[in-house]
Image (cartoon, rainbow, N blue to C red):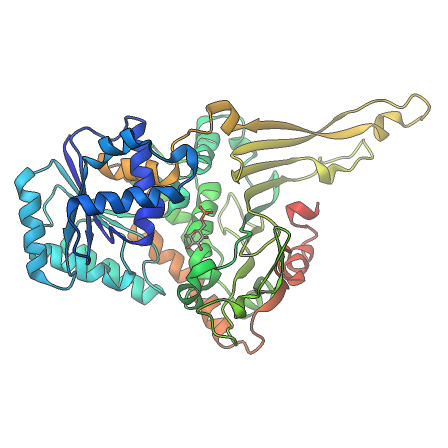
Length: 488
Ligand code: BG6
């Protein structure tokens, strides 16, 4: 299968940080179909050779194990070409069309890794140049809009020129091995499914903590915030993977139909739940990795009086027969105490306690998404018996863990998120991409939070960098009689 992959934003940040390294890994693993061509598109006036050298120089910033040797890069570079384009000029699309027609590839992927403001222009112009053929696939990166209206307007324009089956909306969390494992865990095993419901589960926690701050993206982040950057997409996709019904088969639409139902079942916000069940925070100066770090308002590109949230914790419910009444807690933030993404399923206590034990330490399944990829089942077991005590049985119960480390089991050289997703686009597999109706539903659900915050004079609660966020987040979960996983 001969493919052409056109990378709009070919000299940009995403291209050299994520996409080129992922394409190279696929090439190195032999999984990139033979006969492919990768065409970087940018405004600079570069020859193919200059573009190759530019990409090669960027690999210096990639972790050592994923860097090509000179010989490997020379072979990879044979796939790379460059086309100079001004994305607003129809004439430039006509030249791109000519370049593509010379080869007439079986599949043409248009990866729009540009500023989101250009998404609709690129799609319109591609169609204008006759480049919306049935062989074409369009890849769109987040953020797809700023709210429901702008998201709809992008989707609407894109669908004027491309069918839904041609549109690949990336949420890179769906490409993470751990998230695919979650589907495998739930739908490949009979063991968990009977327990995966309100009768047996007390609460579910989705926590995506980052230790980094906004780095060089202050200006972007200032207009985005954690709710739009992480909750509307990544966290809600994880919630769908945990909460969805088993799909009737593994086809993309069967999976996406079930995810959509979860999003539609999320409990609508009320004035009361908005006030009680959502916490927004913003980091102030503190310590991270042993060094003093500035607060968000001191970061480059950030308004010194900013109210943008760098932390969100919220409580919601999926209002259906399986989940009614089970709280789902979502928490995400920057400059927290560590980089750690986990999903914790806390099971209900045993119906009748014969052991006088610390059951809170057991009875849970922890799914580690990163940095480690693994699964821990926390159980109570009989520890060392104390012969002198009459209630030795009770005293010696100890928490133990069944601990699966997938990196060890399958090797840490597993297919990375972008590598997986790029290969899926080339092969036309939509399972791990987000359909427009899912995306719109997610926006619909987060919008009342944004509106509430816009009218809330209190602003975000400050938390010191290097901590787990504002204390209001612990207080929110404590109201239900639970605590965040790391506080257990
Ligand atoms: C991106 C957000 O979508 O995800 C970033 O824009 C965030 O702000 C990143 O840092 C987190 O991704 P990962 O894979 O490092 O957890």
